[in-house]
Amino acid sequence: MSSIKVECVIKEQNEVGESPVWEEKDSTLLYVDIMGKRVNRWNSLTNQLDSIATEKLVGSVVPRQAGGYVIAEGTRFAFVDWVKRSVTPVTNVDDREKPNTRFNDGKVDPAGRFFAGTMGLDMKPDVTDGVLYTLLPDHSVVQHFDQVHLSNGLDWSLDHRIFYYIDSLAFMVEAFDYDIQTGGLSNRRMVYNMEKDEGIPDGMCIDTEGKLWVACYNAGRVLRIDPQTGKRLQTVKLPAEKTTSCCFGGKDYSDLYVTSAYAGMDADSLAKHPEAGCTFKVSGLGVKGIPPFSYTG
Image (cartoon, rainbow, N blue to C red; front, side, top):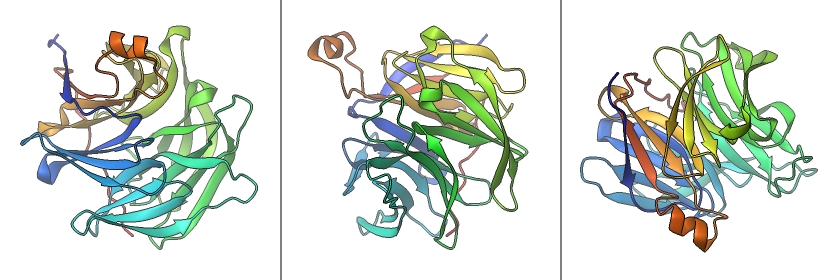
């Protein structure tokens, strides 16, 4: 067994860090602070952190093939030009019947579509106002399903035939059959049910062995899960209770970057967990991730 090392690499604390994405060409980690309304870029070589403010609460950020990024903020998709430091709205998903929602986690599928879901702002267990959307390359939006509590982690199997998905307050990881041609989802099923002490399933990513890594909010850990057997294979503990999401990055994608949050913590909790809201690097796991896909529109 290689020895696993967990270190806080980005000390700037996020109210709610989320949506980490590794950018290979610059050795940078891209991520958002939802409540801080910021898109952040951290250069792992120089340790410099650069940020752009967003107008609304920003749930996720993804790379764009044409350059820059796409964000899901408030109830709209927008393009970010990092050089010009501009944010340009693309399209709204304003649902008149569900005014109290906002975008949360999102990711680009292997065909270049941007999947992102919404959640109710008040996070009541009985409110299911969230929806899973896709921003297509032509900038139109497709709605896949509604009745979601809190749309969160998502990824695709290595053969692109399965879509993995987390609705946090359903406390499980689900799978769908995935049609890469159409982006269509079918045959919804459960692949992992959270144990009592594992907290709330949040962001996730996949490794080159097809296993899922799930960040557990309020449980200070990331789980490695086998979606074929529904078994937990590994638990990595972190010094921040509110672990929010993860992605592989670094040389050969062999490091796992984990974002966290400090929102909602009182002075006592913050004193006990001084690294709450920091971003961590887990090395020595002995597995690798895959490069992220870019939005093609």
